[in-house]
Length: 622
View 1 (cartoon, rainbow, N blue to C red):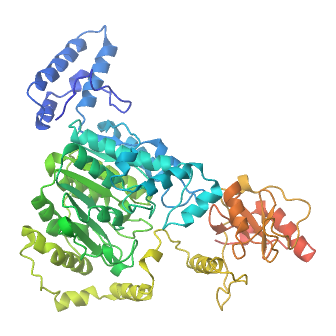
View 2 (view 1 turned 180 degrees about the horizontal axis):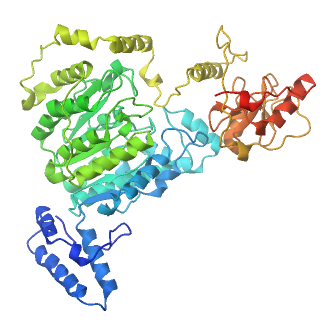
View 3 (view 1 turned 30 degrees about the vertical axis):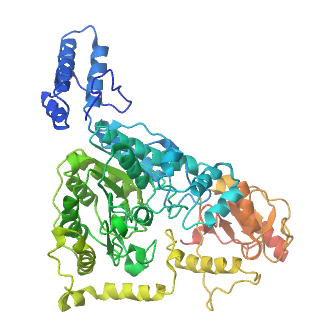
C-alpha cells in the first residue's frame, strides 16, 4: 500500500512544505499511515524517523539535516498528489489568443493553488509522455501518426488541418502537449494504485473526453481518462472503474470507448437541449445505456436548457448517482472535471458553484478507500476553473464541505426522471422507479414556462441542423456570426460575386485597440494601388494589403490568399482596398486606431485622389 515512506526512498520535491520546526510534527499523523493500510512493520520505521528528528532538534549543530529530514517526512505523509507540466501550455491558437481553450486555463489554476497554500499540501507527481502502446489501447495507428505529423507542418498546413476537424486548432506543439497531458494522468494513476498516495488531481490540457478513436474533436486530441482507465485495467487487474463526467458537454469519446464494457461505469451530467447542444445528436440522450457486456453501464443525465444550479446537480447526485455507484462499488474513480458547468462560464451558461464541485467530490472520496482522481477537462472562465479545481482538491484533502439541498427546477426534475426510467431496470437500487410514471400535469405546466418556450423555439430552428454541424466555440456577436456564415458559404463555392449579407444596412463597431498593433503594423510605402493584383492568383476584384509587409493578396471571398499569407508569415493585420477597413486575424475583429491612419490615408489617396477626412478617435464609441 503506502510503501517507501522513509526519507531515503521518497526524496523531497520542490513543492514540499519545509516551514516550522519538528515540534509542529503531530504524532497523530501516524494514524494516517495506519489508515492508509501500511503494514505494522512500517510503523517502527516512522517512529524511528520521528525519534531521530527529535534528537536532532535538541542539538544546535546540525540544523540543516534536521530540516531535510523533517521536510522529507512531511512529503512522504502527503496523501493527495498533483501533476502539472508547463509543456502543456505550448499548445495554443496561432492567431486567436482569446480562444477559450487557452494556456492560461492551467497557468491561472496553478497560480491560485499556490496563493491559497493548497499546493503546499500536495505531493508533486512527476509528469511524463504517454507511450504509443498506451495510446493504442484507445486510439488507432492512423490517429497516432496524425498527431506526430503536426510537429513538422508549416503554419499554412496547420491552419488547413484545423479546418478539417470539428472545433479543433493545432500548432507544432500540439502533439507534445497532448502526449504530456495523457501521460501525466497515467503517472498520477500509477501513484494512486501503487499506494504512494491516496488520491490526486491532474491540471492538464488539452482536454480529452470528446476525442474519438480515430480523430480529434472539440478541443480534444487524446482520450486522457480512457487511456488512464485502460492502464489501470491492464496493469493492476481492476474490474470496476467509475468515470463521472460533470463537464457541461457530453463526453462522446469516453462513452464510445467503453460502451460495450462493464468494467467501466460511465456517468455524464451535461446539457442536452434536445440534442442541439454540443457535441449534438441522440448519443447524448438518456436512452444510451450501453450495449453487449456494457448494457446498463452508461448513464446520461441530460439537461434541457441553461442555468442549471447546485440544487439541480445535487438532486441528480442524491437520487441517481450515489445509489448506482454505491451498488457498483468501484475500485477506482475518475472525474472528468469540466468546470464549464460552473457559474460565469461563457460556453456552458450554467450556475454550478465551486462549493457544489467540492461537495460532490467529498461524496466520491468515501468510495474505494478514497482512490479518486480528478482530471481537468473543459472550463473557459479562468476564475471558475481555478476555484472549481481548488474546491475539489480541498475535498480530496478531507476538508469539511457545506451541505447543499437538492432543490431541482422542474426541467431538471424531468431530466432526472427520464434518466432514471431508462437505467432503472439494470440497477436494484432503482427498482422502485415506476417505468410508466409520467410527470404530473402541474409539473408539466411548470416545465413549459416562458424559459422553456424560448428553448423549444430555438430547438425547432435547429432541428434541421445536423449534429456534426454544431460548433463547440461560437462567437456571441450575432452580426459576426451572420457574416462568417455567409463567408463560409461563399468560400465553399465557385461564386466570386460579393455576398449579400442583408436587405438592411448595418454598421460594425470596430475595436479601438488590439494587442497586435505594435508588432504587426509597419510604415506604409509612399503610394498604394487602388486595385492591386493578388501576388498568388493575380485577381484584383477584391484585394487587401498586409500591413506588415504591404504585399497585396485576394480576400476570403475570392481565393483566400491573404488569409493563407497571414497564416504562413504570422502577419495578422490587413487593409481592405474595397472599403479601407482594417481586420485583425489575431482578434477576429475590425480595428480602428491612430496607428492605422497613415495606411488608411494612403489607401484613400489611391482610391479617390485626395486624403481622407479622419474622424477623431475619441468620437468613436464602443
